[in-house]
Length: 123
Ligand SMILES: [Zn+2]
Image (cartoon, rainbow, N blue to C red; front, side, top):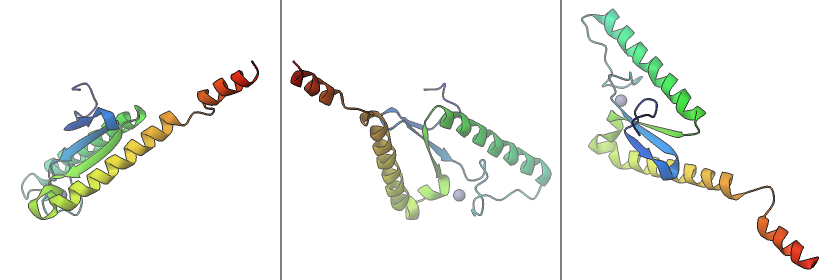
C-alpha cells in the first residue's frame, strides 16, 4: 500500500479507510501547544510547515478522489490523557464509514431476488 498518496500510517481496506498519525509540529497542528515555530529561522520554518500542509491537503484530495475515507489523528491526541477518547472517536468514525460503504454496495435500485420471484409467477 506504499503507492497510496501521502503514505498513510494505517490502511484499513475493509473500511476503505486510511489513517494518518500526524506529528503536531511537522504538520502544523493549529492551536496546539506542540506546534511552535522555532525562534530561529522563523521564516524558513513557517514556509516549510506551510508546504507540508499544502502537500497534506493535495494528498488527501487524491485519496478522496479515489473514495478513501480519511482519518487524521494528531500526535497530541494520542498522549496518555487523551488516548482513550481519541480511540473511541476513531472507532465510531470507522463504524460510520463501514455503514456508508455497505449502504452503497447493498442497496441496488432493484433487488435481483424480487425479479427472480416475478419470473416464477409468469411461468
Ligand atoms: Zn497537536
